Length: 118
Image (cartoon, rainbow, N blue to C red; front, side, top):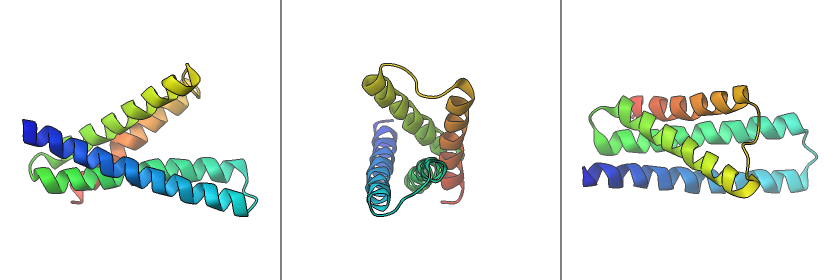
């Protein structure tokens, strides 16, 4: 069980490093160009999906069994940490219930898809 936990944490760490790099790139693009708010929101959503896909892919490669499940675990934990950070910074949930649920489904789905394709 310890090996599985460490593998999931490694996959999550890679996902968050990837997220940080892409968000820095997005910030640079915002600095250089005038981009509409809708495009920025879409880019952030795409970054979350890509990061959970990467985390699920890595978890699937490390686990080799029950890849679907471990990708889901990575996606759910990724979303949970996003929620905790949001609560820590804003002291409330950002967005309405539909946005929160859709973000959860995208994170979980990205992790599962990455793991299935690993």
